[in-house]
Image (cartoon, rainbow, N blue to C red; front, side):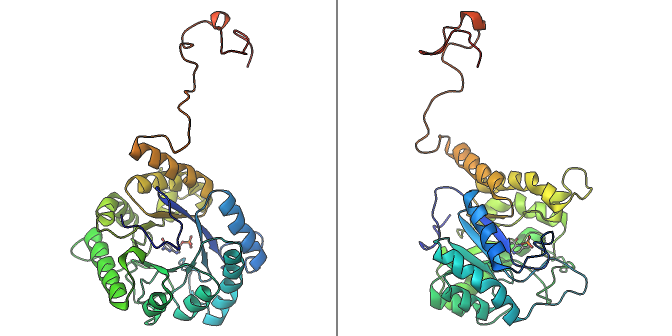
Length: 318
Ligand code: PMM
């Protein structure tokens, strides 16, 4: 896996990207979804939970009947104040946008990465803006002629979903290279759930090592998507109840070499990526002592005969 740009956080494990959606379908319970203070507070909580960076988005791509895109002005108003405050607090910020104007204003406000779910296809200026600013760009696979609504399914290609996604992402990466964005700053994302059915999503996760082997950093965005909420018995659970399944996907993605996972609930995925790092390296994390959970030799003695450790009462209550 190539090392991403130095402006992004660097770790010898998969990173955790916390999601902050400033959109009408994100903070539905509080009704204050477009209050920058609410978004900033959520981002700070996700960082405290162990996120390495925050992805701020002002335009929902969730399928909704009759969905229309927000205007550029509306998107700017939602995103830029949040980015400015987070960047000023030293938090690494990615911005989820398909618009070059929003990317430019966000970079100006301190964003270090642009996350474009259209893969640079929706706005012809996107790649040149990212190249000129030396920021990282995430290019996601989304085969559609209707950016702005994730509904529907693209015509399945004869080569199968895995080859289709790999081929499309590599062609997007070539466009990014031609615009002057170096490979280590070009992050690829299979676009789980975007014009894909559950079989497609699982096939893409199964084939993640092949995408990682192409040498680009890879981002996985499975969090709370329908295919995670239906994995147990096929019946859909509320998205929040899919957080355990999401954490399992985070562990497996990290073990498969993903650069980062994009999640709503950070703490379980933080543990998952650390578990994957220890598992794949076969070593405890730096600075962790080698002490076992059980006292040496203490295993099979009745409590009354256990001398305990120095300072502990034999067989005493714990
Ligand atoms: N999914 C959503 C939005 N943005 N960006 C990337 N790179 N990858 C994704 O899978 C992705 C994304 C939709 O999910 P949300 O509405 O829960 O944020």
